Amino acid sequence: MPIFYEEKPDHTMIWVLIASIAMLLLAGLQCRVSIQSQDSEDISIQSQDREDIKEQPTTQPVVKKTTQPVVKQTVAPIVDPLLKHFSATELQTIRIAANRNDCNGDLFLILLAIRKAENGRSGLEFGVMHPRAKNTNLDIQAGWAAATVVKNYQRWLDAGSPDDYIIFLSRRYCPVGAANDPNGLNVNWVRNVKYWYENFHSQVQSK
Image 1 (cartoon, helix red, strand yellow):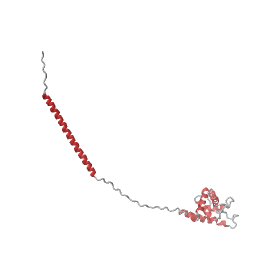
Image 2: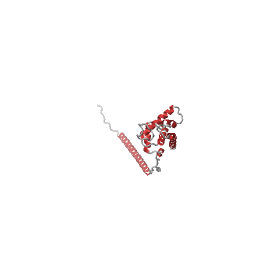
Image 3: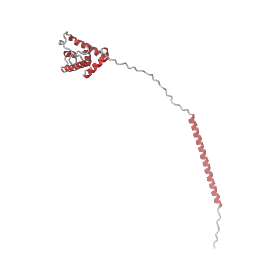
Image 4: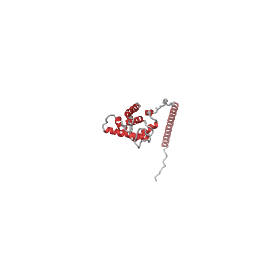
């Protein structure tokens, strides 16, 4: 009958294994201590960096404020040179009547010159003797006069612009030898209208 013997444990291998484990544990512990030491150094460096940052002065850029002088601009009032010869109300009324009839530019100045040359009373300011305009008011008188100036200007152009326009206009507006001019005053009309027109024209041009 075979005899079997129980195998005895090899304690040498056990001690080698224990020694290996101990060495591994010791190596791990040293590594951990080394890592912790490195971490401590990094923390110390970071702390030093923060202190350096704190110590650096925060300087804001100096912005020089430039004080601009306050210049008060004064706008000179627009003065119509024609107001030297007409009241504001009268001039405005004549302008409105002229605009209704497209009487602008030099024709408007001729209209004003007629007003000065006629120098008529209230209701006959422009010397318009037509029954529908006579003894009315400044607006109607100015409107009829403006229409006459504009229509005769077109007639003058259509006729080839003969002579001077004011002379041409006088033959319709204030003809010499008219029945309603017993004293022959119409002969002065052209000279008076030209005088006032040239006066107004020079003042408006030099404005």
